[in-house]
Image 1 (cartoon, rainbow, N blue to C red):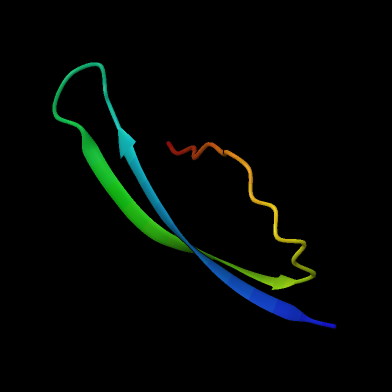
Image 2 (image 1 turned 60 degrees about the vertical axis):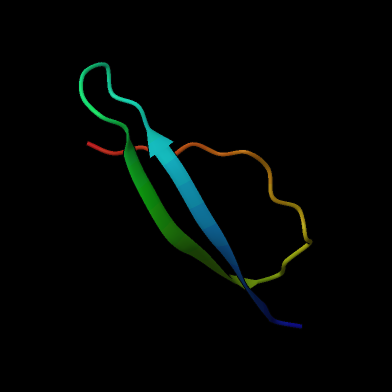
Amino acid sequence: MLITSERGLNCVYHPVRGAAQHYVGTVRRFGLDIGVTGPGRMGGR
């Protein structure tokens, strides 16, 4: 059985200098969804 799921994402980046930066997004999955989502980290350059 193929399943799709969607989960909202909301995070805040706190730089050493300057104001906090707020980000929102959506994570979409396709395939087997066992219903478990743990903490994660977002990286960028």
